Figure 1 (cartoon, rainbow, N blue to C red):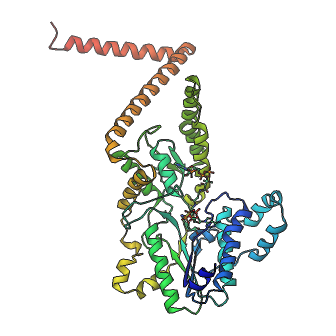
Figure 2 (figure 1 turned 30 degrees about the vertical axis):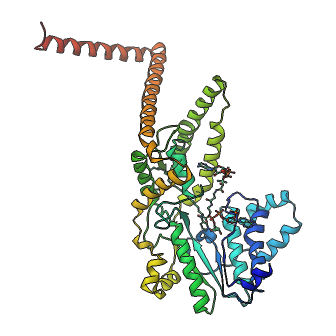
Figure 3 (figure 1 turned 180 degrees about the vertical axis):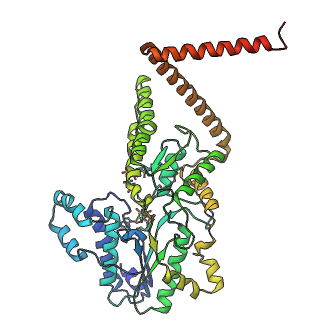
Length: 418
Ligand SMILES: CCCCCCCCCCCCCCCCCCCCCC(=O)SCCNC(=O)CCNC(=O)[C@H](O)C(C)(C)COP(=O)(O)OP(=O)(O)OC[C@H]1O[C@@H](n2cnc3c(N)ncnc32)[C@H](O)[C@@H]1OP(=O)(O)O
Ligand SMILES: NC(=O)C1=CN([C@@H]2O[C@H](COP(=O)(O)OP(=O)(O)OC[C@H]3O[C@@H](n4cnc5c(N)ncnc54)[C@H](OP(=O)(O)O)[C@@H]3O)[C@@H](O)[C@H]2O)C=CC1
């Protein structure tokens, strides 16, 4: 502690809980109280030049247009922190929906409280807040497509590529405000430099977003993800990757029943019959839970102003602009998504590119099983219908006799006949 207090000259405060479903007490502990404690510690650091706090662009996702300012919270963070000390977990559970109000989860709410703490309790410290949107794989550094966790889009891309996720309730024309992780790092380092060297009079907020400079849409991302799976599929897929986006709740529920639950229930039944432990329904539960948590973010668009970020870019020298590049206007989304999917395959799933031909063979087998299954299902349904309905029987006799007549006609008119 002594060494930290005497030697630290800059703090990048990134630690947080990023789970959307965290208990409010834990989220407040990690994202609010810890920030408060770190500010206190920072105030005892004689050499400290800047305190950079990592927040999220979604800390004010209850608003549609978001400026680079700290918005007041409906309940003061101090009151929330105090109440966490004496309320028990059951009561906190009960009041959480009322406290978080328009915020979709405890994560975004606690990050908003964290910002207010930085704003109110930084005292004489030189602080700045960076707000990234949906952080994705690297764009350029150390190499394109690097990724190391299943947060955000990565988990859904895996679930789609492995054939579990076949449909999402998402708005294809909603802006997919993704931002590569190396862009976030570059911007954060540049903010550290600017805050320490230029010492702005007031604490500045920087939006690290892509939507207003180089917008991309969920529909376009979905198509590109599927196009990459055609060329480079993931190994040992459960079904062929083939997903769709819909805004219609009924369609989405139909997809859940037919495309998500039916195959895993059938497969678990097969596992049980062959004496193995069923595991697919549990996995599907987890995937659909993840989807339900992310749906809020893929069915809305936000506008983030980026004046401070653009100002920062203009103060960097051309050389620094190149080294600490955070200009997302240069980003080609299709290339980025391709590298992202390949990065997931390589760095998260640890799959080798040498296995691609075998993965393609596996998908072909799955396609044949799919056709066989559908044909069998159709024939059984038709057989049952014929047994029960006179109309169906008449249609069936009509089709059979029509085919027979056609066949006889072609045989009679064929020049090959002897
Ligand atoms: C047209 C065709 C269409 C094609 C479609 C193509 C698709 C492309 C479209 C893409 C649309 C993207 C939308 C993104 C929107 C993001 C918005 C973010 C906005 C905010 C950004 C922020 O400001 S910031 C933080 C972001 N914060 C998270 O993003 C955490 C979320 N998350 C959780 O809040 C918890 O995760 C939650 C869920 C509670 C579950 O919780 P849970 O307890 O059920 O499960 P766990 O997460 O604990 O996972 C337990 C173990 O399963 C492993 N695992 C999990 N998923 C796995 C998987 N899919 N594949 C393999 N493995 C997986 C995991 O790695 C663990 O493994 P291990 O135990 O070894 O560590
Ligand atoms: N991922 C995203 O899409 C976005 C992330 N952000 C913000 O970026 C920051 C980093 O997030 P991200 O990298 O995605 O999340 P991770 O969960 O990968 O990283 C969080 C970090 O916080 C550390 N941490 C968690 N709890 C504690 C604790 N009690 N004490 C000390 N360290 C702790 C973790 O350490 P350890 O590894 O040891 O567990 C980990 O290094 C967060 O502030 C998040 O709010 C903002 C916008 C989007």
